[in-house]
Length: 285
Image (cartoon, one colour):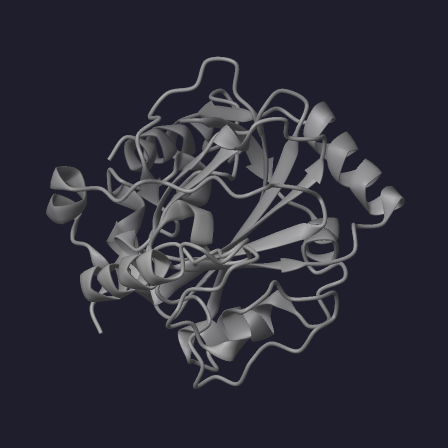
């Protein structure tokens, strides 16, 4: 049954039942109020989408595509250990950051993986393997993201540079988000070509963001990520193929492809001039 026919049927039922008290009907399966994790499941949802995942809950079998049709899901889980958060925050606060695009960011540390997986019940690599349906996956990151006081490139971008061949994990680890503007997800956009999205983008949803929630995004999903002041997010990505030329795409987040600082040799040191020129040539390609 199509969405229009379903809605027409619901209206007819409502007319016939108008004298009955407290009757409520579910909204359209594609409406922002009925996205993954909300109390009301889509009418055509598989059983695994009827509610959010609980801490440590086993994810459904690989033949159940739990991120469809919207292109994302989340797992509600225990917050990261306080000492782990402090070490991540210290590293971020004391490091020289790359301020580019909508974020200020640095390359992550080992504690980032611990924080991302806190309370999930399995490794994020296992989840990535299942979502990408591949045993061999390549990892990008982790990256620590923070507030950029002068953000640029604020238009929606891919959730992973490799698009359909990638998957991303995002989690808030410090601070509280008073507004959901920090994360906007354009549901179903992973089924659109870039031109289609530009001409007819679906309305974004703004899910609740907290330190007890791990987001899993289809790589081809379009989204906005803008950390508020005082907040720290973590990102890690997985793909079935190397990044390759995707790092040069104009519709990817800078923090996903440019998060390592390469120390330059002193120009006057032995071989320094040659190394410096070669580095700059590579950097400016």
